Image 1: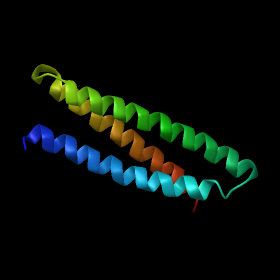
Image 2 (image 1 turned 90 degrees about the vertical axis):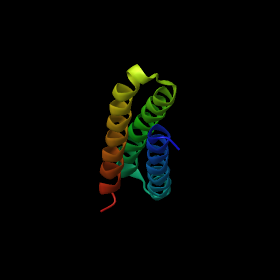
Image 3 (image 1 turned 30 degrees about the horizontal axis):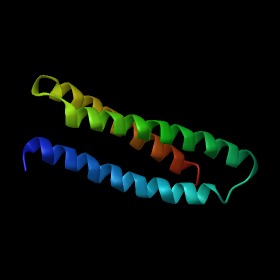
Image 4 (image 1 turned 180 degrees about the horizontal axis):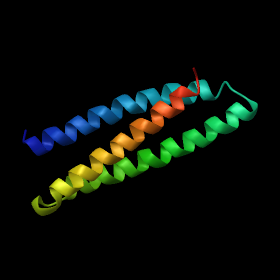
Length: 95
C-alpha cells in the first residue's frame, strides 16, 4: 500500500469512527423535545453538511493527480477537522 493509499485509509477510518459517534448522537437527539430538539436539529444539519463536504474532498483526493495531491490532502484534512469540531459541539449539547 502506498503512502497515498494509507493516508486515504486513515481518513476513512477516522470518518467511520465519527459516523458511529454521529449515529449515537442522533439517536440521543431523537429523544429530546422543544427548544432542545430544535437546536439539535440545527446541529445535525450542520454535521451532515460538513460530512458531505468531507466526502466530496475525500473523493477529490482519490482522483487528484500528483500535482494537486498535496493541496487536496490539506483540504481533506481541513474538512475532517471541521466535521470533528461540529461533532464535538453537537456532543456538548448533551452534557
